[in-house]
Image (tube, rainbow, N blue to C red):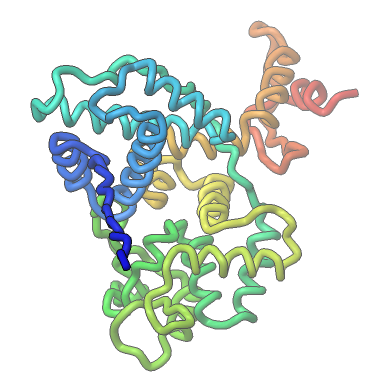
Length: 338
């Protein structure tokens, strides 16, 4: 009896590397120059761009300007915001510029890539003073951790990563004021004063602990920014706020409240840790530009001629809650209507 021989053949499939050696060198070298959230953001941008290139059998160093433009249109089709699209294209341009400077490619294909024009007016969700106050009360009822987190975001304008990265041993006392030393964006270490309300909430959140993170998650480890976002959203829901609220919403509320209180723009910029004053001005434009300008123009046109005596200056309270100094009585009538 003949036993049929079974021929077993193994077929080895050749899997090509995702990146070439030069591409890997460029990616690792470029990302090594950044740390923290900046590195995470750039990694995410390049990962999405590399995935898009892989789906089209396109090498990173084989891309042309037209390919990068098509990637931008792909992001637009997905409904990405203009700010997100601009950041992704900026990351790609910086990556190729780094590769060009290191001599890994001859020239950058992203040199003349068009980016969307960004307006300098903030479209982030805004909260008024009553809504922020309600959230602070709700957070106080929820416990020390939630109250401390909400207070640091709303009363000190901290970024969520700055708040969650704070440590107990960085709490201090300076000239009778409670302080907290934090690591801000860009690796800058600053010491900020704490309002008594915030200091008491932090003391409750810390309890008997003497070191380690101020904010802990349910697992006993440091609270991350995603967990902090869930806390803020839960407090907003319990406060009856139907808007889409996140940690940045409270930072936004801090900036607009400081500007409403008359704090100079330069001081608000420093408190918010904005490198560019135009970033802070975005919140200022969103706060007063639309309500105030028509009143100011109407008052100017209704002012008496230069050769006539000018009535005493008055302070006019606008319907929006903002005030404009220097309107004449004739201007007041023009601004308020018949």
